[in-house]
Image (cartoon, one colour):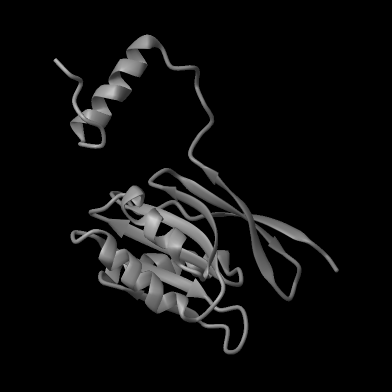
Length: 166
């Protein structure tokens, strides 16, 4: 059996985040829809799920046709059994990951990012699988004291940490 490795660019559209996962059952489609919709009232999303047996269709759902199509395009490029691609806007992965992790169908979460994203895929001829992801770029250095201050201020500005006591 021959093994071919491929790197697939699945960078999310501007202004969106992408989540790459593996799931294992057709019930994934309805459960992921409910988990996303219940996680954040402002969320817009589309996702695609590649069946691995039976008719082996790319199943799709969401509440935004443009994001559904973007997820389907990326699912076609990855073309790995049981892969799940979620593209969302008006919410952050931190809003939805806890709910997704609770779904019994979710096997692995590979990435949740707005960065350029590549998926490393193994192809053995009669099937494909995700080996891992390359998320963003390599580090350019170690944060300075100024960088630490900016990070802490940013988290408080966007409401993810409480303000410092006066």
